[in-house]
Image (cartoon, rainbow, N blue to C red; front, side, top):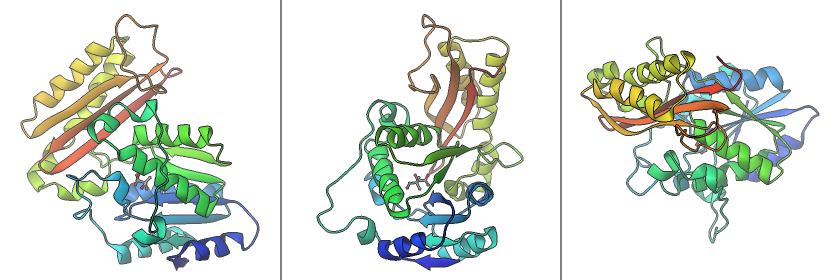
Length: 284
Ligand code: PAF
């Protein structure tokens, strides 16, 4: 496994040898969810590249950029064991050189939900992911379903800008009690950690209602809000039952929905947790 810092080194290694490349973009502090992306990339490609970069442009001024958890030595040991070939660990100036002023902005898909709660977040994500795509030129790039709106935004960007690669979205990895794995789970105290599975319980309650025939967005959102309200440590940012492609909220008077993205952001202590369940139109 080669660990490099500069764009020119990535490009030099990328050119060596035939075969496909899979890219797993990360912000480090890896957990089993990231390693599942690396394992999938390993299965589907001849070479696997990983980036570790805590991207400042996707954090708002009041967010946790400085405190974001980091452990490069542990990340590299895990990636070596997982069979990564190349890890790019750039400095901020390598990604954003002096006088940097070019950003990628996805419009509608980036507006609601996380986009509304975190202004500028998806502009930062789309910009850094576009740069990663240019630097690595992968055949496939792997992202987690846990960041559902991020996956929609990146798929839109890749299609709109004709990046010649497949965006592969992999299932959310969960703890046995349902909590979705996230680097930010380290912020939870034991008491808060015990409360955190309420997100998945709320999503499952709405999923069960959908599967029993409920199609009214308002009622699905109410079901999730009621489950969350029973947990005193949970402070709800939003709950959503939205169209999986446009992310527009499902309303009672609309056409029969083609599926639903049930999602939420909930604060527990200093952690802001997000989670979702995607039900495609073919699902019951
Ligand atoms: O999902 C993440 O970890 C980040 O948003 C990403 C895609 C690596 C861009 O910084």
